Length: 239
Ligand code: UDP
Image (tube, rainbow, N blue to C red; front, side, top):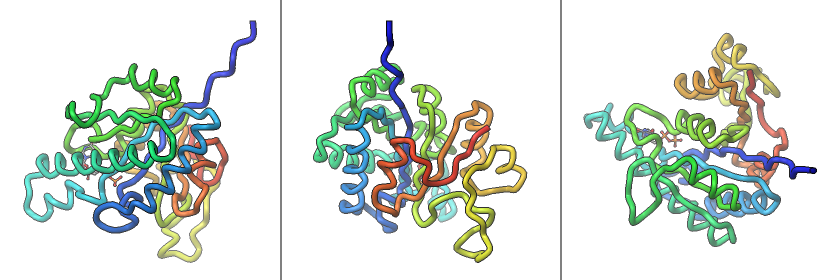
């Protein structure tokens, strides 16, 4: 018999910077716009998991430089990501999308605990799964968690949404006018040329497991939908 083609399932990383619209706290206009864009893609059949950052509230490394103990500061950072997860959940539901938040730190009144098989079931039913609280472990980043969650919930691709930059460049485009926009780089090239794609732990998970990624810009309206649907709008990073 003929089997239905497997649905496209992707993991989207949204940084804390996006949630705050570049400032401390939450920018509801930006979050609702991105939520509507996610809804447009979900209605076209894409299965979506989302990892949210928390830099719009706290970054553990910054708090520890200012005198806090690193682990406790990192837990504050992780709790910030949960606030972003709830904000995104709210605007997704307003946009008509069914959602579940799963957190790596148990908080039963607020969210489900991270359960990978249940996350997969949610996506198969058309629900967007939002992963909060990072890995639940200090010294990790939400970029690293994005790769881990994508691998464990069997996503075919990680979409790294960025603010202020729309692709990987040969040098920092904000500093170097000769910086070249790259359409496609391999992990080996990125390492060799020291391209700033993501932190080293995230990068090694991606490379070791040959997870394809796309780095793209969140600032242009419509980009989130296009990236989720599989359009190439930023830089592809592959094995
Ligand atoms: N964090 C952590 N473990 C994790 C994920 C995040 O300790 O698994 C903390 C860390 O302090 C980090 C903060 O949460 O600075 C916010 O996450 P991140 O900096 O990755 O957010 P983004 O840069 O994407 O806004």
